[in-house]
Image 1 (cartoon, rainbow, N blue to C red):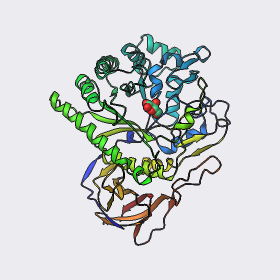
Image 2 (cartoon, rainbow, N blue to C red):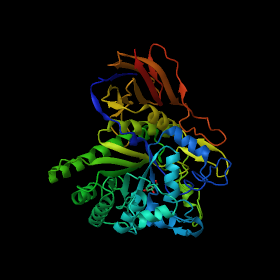
Image 3 (cartoon, helix red, strand yellow):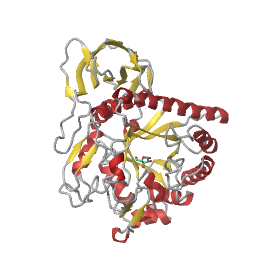
Image 4 (spheres, protein in one colour):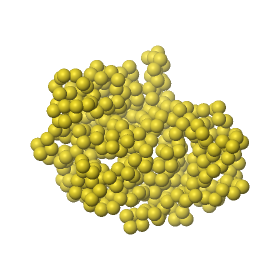
Length: 490
Ligand code: AHR
């Protein structure tokens, strides 16, 4: 098979906001306890953070980490996680039927984020709490005033404010599983008033309003319209969440998942613009795709996990080669919409539907999905170029006209990087490139395997890993492969 990829370096989609490579740590399963934090671990630093995990996170170069949830945040009292650890309450955590010890809270997490070279994206509880608690948290984190919550932070040992710029107004509030689930109108009013108080406290912060918890929710569309009609002037982003899976073992269809992501982005952006028009506003609402990933492998095993444990092994999906290809396609899709998607969070980062895994008390290893994320995060910065790909298509149960090749080109300044996935099960693809004349191919990194179900594990951590392909005359994308081609100016 052949495909032609055409670019023009002056035909730019937009600047890639680095926060498109964000991620997420929730108080869920072993993400925090046994994941990023384990004071008895041999690699623990002076605060009990695992340095082995920290190194892998740093390599990923994640600019922003959403915290502390997720569903968890909707029954969380942030005050439980500050100050003297000996006095912190041990609580029932109702979102995930676990026990929360509160050993880690915002005091510690903001320090972990700094040590990881990242920034905190903080969610506030709009499930069981409201505007008052949210504004208090903003004061605690960000203010230098001589007032109660800023003083409390100082008393807890943090003279300097944490400087949290990005805040989420609750989580998935349209979902009936959400603690404190609300109708669109109920959420819209609460989000609006909370946003006002938070911005009065610190006008420099940016706010993300909850969108629907997924494109298949019956609320999708009307929820966004209702929320934006109420909150338009007070918020900066609307959130999007979507998880993909292959429960029917239909790889060809699964590989087309990014088409669903693409449609979701287009539809949500259209709704934002519709309300902009209605309001005669000059402001654009941007998109924060703050939960995306593959999530289905662990569904059955999670049903067997006993309630009321500390850090139970929940949502520990083990990812294979086809999952890595889908993650590669999803990243390409986010880049193609970087003019609108300014923030995106791979959900999540450690142990819970995650690229990085740990043994509690033992080793770390990386999953297949670590690699497309790593290479995109490191090499996919700069400007996304409009990338036209002429190639064949195929049809599946749920998708029509699926292009065999998914691709995007990024202008990194000193060179360009082409990311491409070949979805074909049996045909390699010879690429013809147009618009690349000023550039020379310097490397071709490939992730593929004959066995689409192959996974890494703690004992075989390198079963799946990218390899460097020799550069010869032709550029060939292997069947079912993720590829990164780096070019420098001639
Ligand atoms: O990321 C796991 C969960 O998925 C989050 O807690 C929730 O927001 C979503 O439903």
